[in-house]
Picture (tube, rainbow, N blue to C red):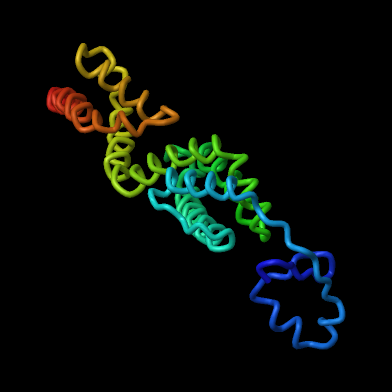
Length: 215
């Protein structure tokens, strides 16, 4: 099977289906042998290098084993992004568009069953994969580590809306409240979330004074 492909009903026969097909007379008669198209050795090395850049691990140098390695890594990304997608789709968490774009890049790569076509496609979408890699690490850091602070920021910002008009007039609370809104509305807020604690504290201090004065 390293030099030929088995076709049945016009489609490539997956390796895990080969035994059943060749041992079942009715199916065996439908099998067509086709000389397998092999990837260029340079394309294989390019795919290995790109895989290392994306996943920080060099895949094997065999064509089939490299495809298995790269698709396994991409499938892990896909499952992770799908988990984040349910939250991002609510509109309360960042990354919705980037998650959708990333999944769109991954999907056809996982659909390829022939190693030659997979490696060719993998190399062709190099720029998209590198961009996805950067976005993936930002998203993973956010959803695994920054999400509690994001939720605290959202909750505080919502609570401050009760006194928004008065808070906006304050020289300290006004700019801080606007900055909170800017962070929550940012397409990629990951590098800004470190400001959240200080902003909340600034607005909360003024808000507490307003409440105390009313009492």
